[in-house]
Image (cartoon, rainbow, N blue to C red; front, side):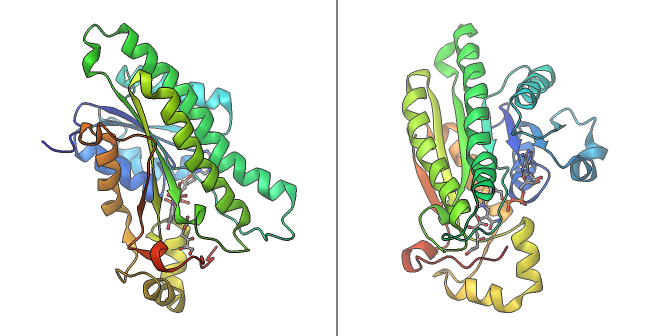
Amino acid sequence: MSFSISGKTAIVTGGANGIGLAIGRHFVDKGANVMFADMDEKQLVHELGENEEDSAQRYFAGDLREKLTQANLLSATIDAFEKVDILINASRQIVPSDALSAEDDAVEMLMQQNFMTALRLSQTVARRMIKQAEDDDDDENVIGAIINLSSIAARNTHPELLAYSVSNAALNQMTRSLALSLAENRIRVNAVAFGSVMSGSLQRTLKENREYRKEIEERTPLGRVASASELAETVQFLASDSSDFMTGQVLTVDGGRSLLDPVMVPAH
Ligand SMILES: NC(=O)c1ccc[n+]([C@@H]2O[C@H](COP(=O)([O-])OP(=O)(O)OC[C@H]3O[C@@H](n4cnc5c(N)ncnc54)[C@H](O)[C@@H]3O)[C@@H](O)[C@H]2O)c1
Ligand SMILES: O=C(O)C(=O)C[C@H](O)[C@H](O)CO
């Protein structure tokens, strides 16, 4: 089967909401085991609680900025599924910060949330993937895939989105650096830069503010925003052996918006 992820184990951060939740559900549907990780325990229980006994999906609640929490997440995943093959970094925060007056705290917060958390967790999980490959006799088949969810905000710009844009640009560069470091271990690292997606806080804004939605649609050559579930298929491709020869790439999935429109439309 193409894009097969059946039998793989994935950790999905930001798994309680939006795109992370949609990806995790899609992966379970395609035969993967998924650990949904998020700091929003109430929402994890709300979305996944009744399936707690489902052998293919588990959840882990904690603030993933903490190194110890990340180590606990990895242990919980190994306890539940014995291995980890795929890491999807989808947790994030977005708050406006003005290019001229942004305070250190605001910039540091988004760099921690959107860049450092993904870097640390990628390092932690990659070390485990390397160990798994060393322990596996038939290691020709062993691969790892790390996928960072990024934004066209890394390339496009707006003065009110300074810290968010910079944190995503850092994530893209980290994708390339880590891909080079991990290539010899056959762990692939890629990113997807989304445009506007019907998900999370943006979904609320798009629903409440028709003018804003119209503006985004008009600025997108394909004329619409994306659904979280269609994006899950792109991420599935990057997680599967079908993209076996791809690493260090940032795939833009934005309906063509970044071709025409270098200016973001801040909504948050
Ligand atoms: N929604 C969009 O239009 C859009 C556009 C471009 C890129 N993206 C990217 O897609 C990814 C998912 O976005 P989304 O819209 O689904 O976001 P969302 O806000 O709906 O979900 C983010 C999740 O991350 C969790 N989280 C935040 N900080 C955390 C922490 N320290 N520890 C644990 N969990 C934490 C939140 O609780 C939340 O459940 C992000 O990487 C984002 O940058 C989204
Ligand atoms: O949420 C993000 O990461 C985005 O890049 C989407 C934006 O918030 C929105 O489309 C801004 O133009």
